[in-house]
Image 1 (cartoon, rainbow, N blue to C red):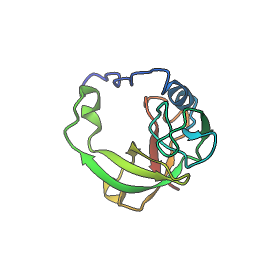
Image 2 (image 1 turned 90 degrees about the horizontal axis):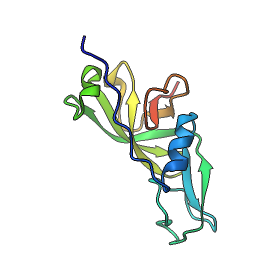
Image 3 (image 1 turned 45 degrees about the vertical axis):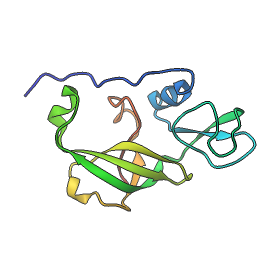
Image 4 (image 1 turned 60 degrees about the horizontal axis):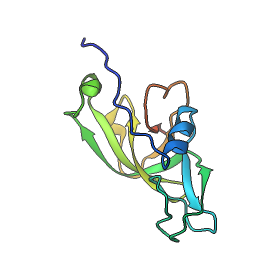
Length: 137
């Protein structure tokens, strides 16, 4: 068994800080224009739907469905080498936003487009620096 390495950490800035802080508490946050429009992901200073800079953060349910996915067999960072296969998926959240995230499962063959997923709870997901999902129960 090889040495366990820390995962690379995302760059934190004023646009994504609330998102990353919430994840460290086990919550998934999305932005939305205060005047309306759908929630969106990735964190940014301007709403892609309304053009507004008056944004609010809203907690997401953490539930969604896999739109598409890749099974990664050759990770690009040594900290992931002992974890293959790694499932990286586009997830459509119940709130309407979508994001790319890792899906943790012991059975990669159980993952298909349309599979229901849910955010992994703390402390189970504490080691992952970005929101991570599992197959829904």
